[in-house]
Length: 326
Ligand SMILES: NC(=O)c1ccc[n+]([C@@H]2O[C@H](COP(=O)([O-])OP(=O)(O)OC[C@H]3O[C@@H](n4cnc5c(N)ncnc54)[C@H](O)[C@@H]3O)[C@@H](O)[C@H]2O)c1
Figure 1 (cartoon, rainbow, N blue to C red):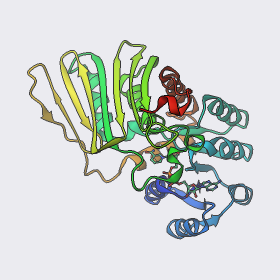
Figure 2 (figure 1 turned 90 degrees about the vertical axis):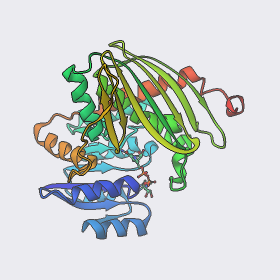
Figure 3 (figure 1 turned 60 degrees about the horizontal axis):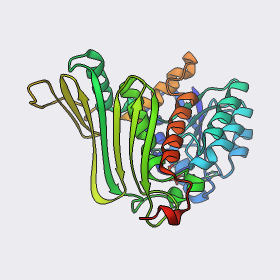
Figure 4 (figure 1 turned 180 degrees about the horizontal axis):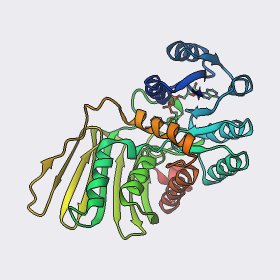
């Protein structure tokens, strides 16, 4: 039985708990949040011991894995403590708020012989793994370009207060949604970002609420993305352009593809599967605890943050906010 501690009892922790409760070989031993009421509520749901200090939780419990669901700025300190106590770490995306923090996390986990996973979940989303299989099969030829459009109100009405505070979140829509974009692009293309350019803009916060960018990948694939948080229309679409066809994804909704005839056909995406992406992600983590090889490790999370730093750097983010406002 793998004993797990959940650190941070917010939105994503709830989905981790729902998935873990479906597994017979794991036990959520402890949960932790500085917000006592929330912590008690999660402890009740998971039948776990509540803690308001993760230090105390790590000192008291004999855990094999900590799932860190804190805001990004706190990922480093918490990972360091888990590693020093010999507890394996799964940390939510984005891995941390700087590449420097990510490097420290990798280093301390290596030095203390604990595993480190980062919660980049795109490969567990059915539309993406179906698209990946189609790309790799060669059925539609060679992947040439990827284009993503995501429009919404960002932050949304239910977003946590820290989301637009750059010191806590690391950045705005490009940091949070962009981490998913980079994960999806890396996974689908099997390649690395070699060039990154972006334009970002701000309205009411010190973090951007709109970002457009271009990525060039090592294998020549070109990527464009528009992450628009000032639109009140919800749209999330990814188009994959191939030499002999096209694949269109609406994440968690649908996937369609066409060959040279241009006639799109719907591809079954198993939307009625018993298990969702979170279950599949954590199942993989549990299995890799045994194999000792993490598919989505610290180096992967670091590379995502490195690309986002490149995008910010090209956008001139470090100018004053006044200069950037449009
Ligand atoms: N994989 C995904 O699709 C996905 C989705 C949502 C969030 N996330 C990531 O998960 C992380 C958490 O996001 P969220 O939306 O769940 O945030 P949230 O604000 O809902 O939850 C964070 C919780 O951490 C608690 N907390 C803060 N400091 C603490 C401390 N020192 N000790 C104990 N508890 C503390 C807060 O009280 C809060 O309950 C972020 O990194 C976010 O980017 C990932």
